[in-house]
Length: 283
Image (cartoon, rainbow, N blue to C red; front, side, top):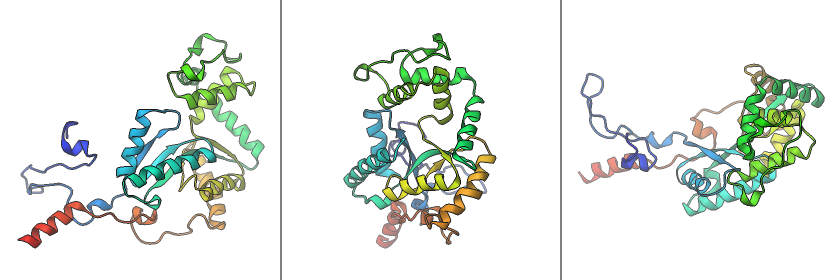
């Protein structure tokens, strides 16, 4: 399907089957039947550090067509603002907030204590080559940092008013520089978590933060990004999930149904099935 086709521009995977063979004879839309429009349609959201037309277009497309949104923001307050913005866009398309789920990314590190978690976080950060982190930090700050001593402080960074890039990212780097971190330490923090927040601590501490975001309306769920697999995934499943279940914010079992049903999303009307039924009624 070409980029110039109407189906592509409308954001749907519709094509015609024309190949003749024992298993594929009919012609017509390949997306047919009563269940066509019932598949969950997620969309990758723009990061909060990319203001401008691209962000607006992505949000508008998602709120017009998608059911779930993979988002990136660093704090609960940012998440609440993000949800408010999304709700306003949903209203323009005649949709209600409950028809759209927001799933921000987080990087959880589960440990027996917060101190042990921080130690593990530092170890994980040491596994990535410093050059990778410094190159990434250079792109965030708009400065070629490869020419500066990695164990020295960050050089002066561009002013936000004249910066041609992600201003949220720039401000985040500036906040890190105020913590007396070296260039190498900041690069490791950035490379290991990117722009998603790292949640470090005991199962109770991690559950506290997830529950807080969820109940405040900053998240409908989470896109979990584990540093190491399967170890970190197993730690989360065996230690954090039971605590969330104990608090009643995570199911202990799933009822029958599709992924859409489990997300609590209504099944949209299927326009292809409606067209077919209308043709049958007329004939």
